[in-house]
Image 1 (cartoon, rainbow, N blue to C red):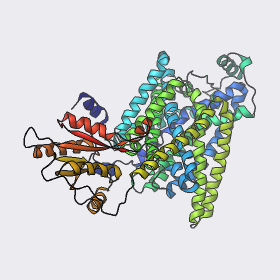
Image 2: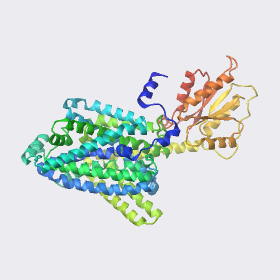
Image 3: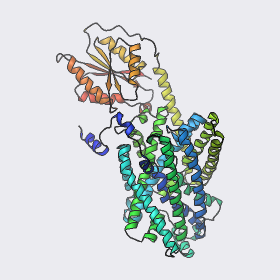
Image 4: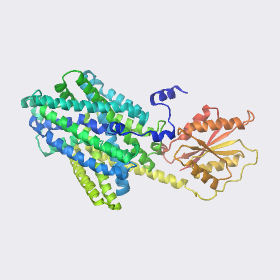
Length: 626
């Protein structure tokens, strides 16, 4: 085995058989850690961003921290209540994309899918940047290496997820619970110290001095007004990102899936509300302020309550770990969303394929690359990334809840009116908040999200157009016997193997070519799972009974290994002497534009290379022009 493959196996693990797929599910404790890490970790920076924006108007404006927090907690409960209904109505998962697509139409579903895709990429970027900020707060000397540390963190989380659900769940659960424990400890200790009078607030004059220093003088201060309050509110709404993750991943729970998902959602939201409210209350009580790229607000609270000891160190390390692992929520959901879009023909088909460890590996690679690019562009700064954050998720919130209203209207089951009213209220509130976010953040970077969503939808539709064109070109009757050319004379031509994935015009032309040059012909089909092999065999017997078909089992979803093994045995059986050759025929698509090659898996290239390495001397391709 080549050295690269050995390294890959050590980092990711050995392939898992398709039969183990049902075992790769979360129990409730693992689900809380994996799917809630984004939402729970947001308490590390949500209050901080509220304080940062309010601080632009001076120390007196910090008194609005608690009212803004209360509004966000109320919104949090409304959204969670609405998503409880979505989970039960759509137990197969799919979240906003599936709900919007099925109830509001294709374009609306694609807008939801694009919004969520953007939000998942930003989730990784913001979480990693915030995690590294927690590290550099405790070790200021590392500040100069912020970008390399961010990229290293993305790689580590990517590798953890490539190992698969069960492996990553066991590895990733501990930091989440450690963070929750440390934050609750901080809140309890802070409440005790406050009650004993040991946590006096900073004097207003000292707060003002720190804020003026952070903003380079009083002249740079802003006037407290509706726009600034909306900006503070919208920045704090980052605490709501990740709530939808559980509804997107209901299928990843153990049976009964929807019931377990709803239980975890309730626990997550209660913990999130408790921690977010508690940190805001402590920040208000102690009077701490925050400056961009300075010591984090959570670090300052920990230093005042725990002192500079072991508890502060554990708090910072737990914050670092959960913020890095908060990206894991996006890694759990973005590949699934991409797979749904790919199955519907709006993204490359490769994104719907399971990798060696029964995860959507190509989606994981795509998410890592996009998040890494954002971290480089925005210099790993949480405050620069936050204006882009949450806009997309509130668009998807609104579309999902509006879709649920239509869902109840169509079904009209018992109690549908109350359900529709609940989801309608959720849609109205999230639409209003989404408008506030967009208005208050537009010039700070939200315009990029507004531009990116239609561009993504256009890309989805362009890809779907290509696949529709391919389907039309390949389509042929599926219920009639096909007319093959006359077989070559007996004993003529080299023994030939034709690889067939599906029975369409492309593979039919390859079979016609092979039949015209040889009398010794066998077609080979690889069963990659999904239960479609038997239906393919019946179709083959109905349409091309004159050509023998060999179906190869592939429990590890590999196309190359079973084919190479079969060809090796076929050549050993049919090569009677050194002057007699066997021929392998591979059907290929020839696209009209080079970029369209990216929409096909190019498995022919890998097969040809693997066969040549094993000594196969005649490998030919039959092109079908799309």
